[in-house]
Length: 89
Image 1 (cartoon, rainbow, N blue to C red):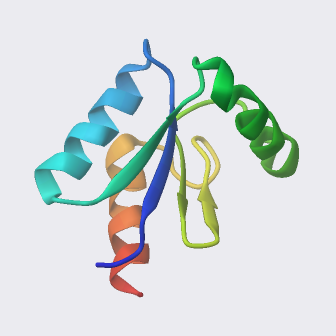
Image 2: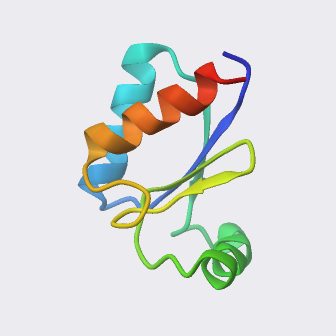
């Protein structure tokens, strides 16, 4: 498990909190990018422009972008997709 997971979150997002908790419980290393922080707005806006995403949590594993309601339809499905992508490395 050497692929770093990047997760774009918002403070008030319960799905983001749930996903991070699942990562912690499984020992999955991740970098959180809080889009409420002004320093992260530009990075997030570029990601939205490229991906068309409009909600969080958005996750990036390697070169794969996982977007809610497109790449996964539940937190469990998103989590399992991340685990699968990590295991393929």
